[in-house]
Image (cartoon, rainbow, N blue to C red; front, side):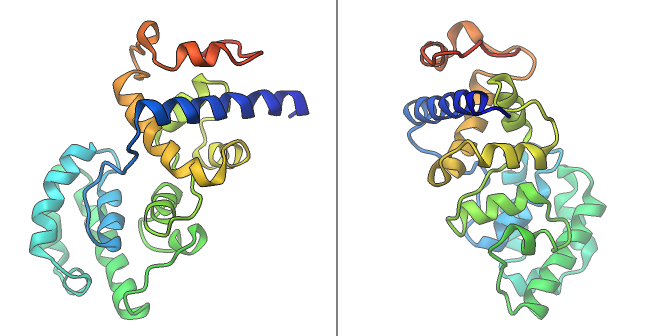
Length: 221
């Protein structure tokens, strides 16, 4: 990437960060949890499932298994029965059970605080790991879900659809201290305005601000 191209992308990124901060003053994860390991479990359940449904299911799940040890000692079939509405329940239940056994019996309940270590746990990919690193451990993180990949692509910040490549590219453009909250705000923006099928470009609250960025070619829709 040429210095000029990178400079333009940095200006676009900073504009989007500032604009979404005004639109969504409060940035937080849509998944409901109280304990760090609960976020790991909820995020695992969110694969190919809406956050709203996950929050309904985890209400019962976390009441049935209120501690990490109770998950570690649980019969997988009991977990399956509760998480069935989230889909892929056999695979998800198995990875949740294995993950909790490792955390409780091998790590004394200590959750890793780096992406590299977290992704060694069963069922934990980079999206989940970055969410944990950012929300739980308050370190710079870039959570690449479908909304984030779509919208950063439309802004011209990346051309890739590969989550890991998008993560690397955006780490170079976003202020580290703002990256995690920006990801949460992008999700909200993607649900409200910059939707996958019918983006509401006419009423986009970022449009005017972005057009003031010198060299911004317009969104790619």
